[in-house]
Image 1 (spheres, rainbow, N blue to C red):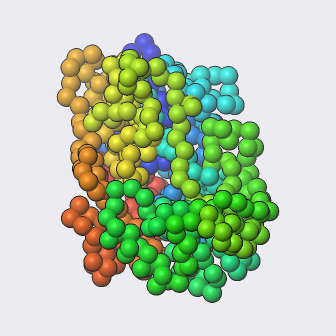
Image 2: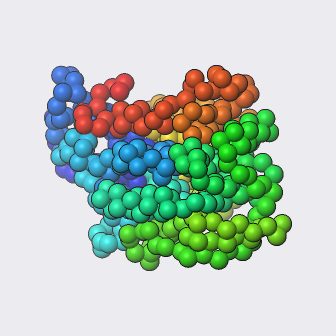
Length: 429
């Protein structure tokens, strides 16, 4: 192996679906390149490459399953997998920095708990979007996560009336999971619009979701905004909230013994309230000046990128953005698409490194899930263990067919396979 004076420095800001997807691709394309590598053991050292993963957590979290995790303790315990259970991450060319990212510049990443900057030649931004806890997960270690989940389980068990505020996909799925697993509890879903699931979806899809909710026994209060509330709020988070301005997930949305007043004057008395009122982006952390004032790097839909997952600005061909933080995920957020976008970014960085400044054809992400400007998006809405509502590119899938397309573990096993848990990755798996 030819040695260079200094290694190529690649930083990955954020783990999970997109960040680990990029890191796995870099592992396969830059480290596991010897002809006899078959995934049976660690790839050989490569002193020419230095990859740094920056994540405030000590493992992978399967966010897709968090609503089910709140209603099923045994399932919840499977959702967090420590990085120590991914042997390929122990490669000598890979370093994991457990810290909070405070600032991203064109040349380095700044950290909250360290004066050291992570300098890079290439960067993958994979920090996703933020939701308040518990869906956003406030914990930074698996032990903290398990402690927090035990508190949620206890609070849910003690409650007789549970209100969920916000009927986007997360709120709707949470209400369905709670009612499915606790059929004797009253579960109320409150939403400001007349139908759930905002976005480019057919009313037929929304009506089918409402039908399933009512079949399960969820009480819906639609067309009503919560305008006042009084509650005893508990801090389930185990981290200091002083960084909540950059990490909204450190703020817990759960409240006890609440009285909610809606815009119609209705009052709801709930033993427990989950607020599921959308996401917040990470724009305060991104300090990347645009080449043009007419085309900002970060908009309300995310970081502006091209089909190669590079930032769509001639100043930043070395910076990529994957997953929910990019504007390619503007319509709906998909874990599978985040993994794929990470794979594309990692592969393209490897191509650029091997090209050594020469022109090279980069890989593309392909068509967006909404068709890149189509009228409707696609979505699979998981409403409890036995119900799924699906809008495909061709319309709403009939209920009987949709039920057969469900994933009992909400794709947990697929996610663990994608992340190469307990093994070394190979091309194609």
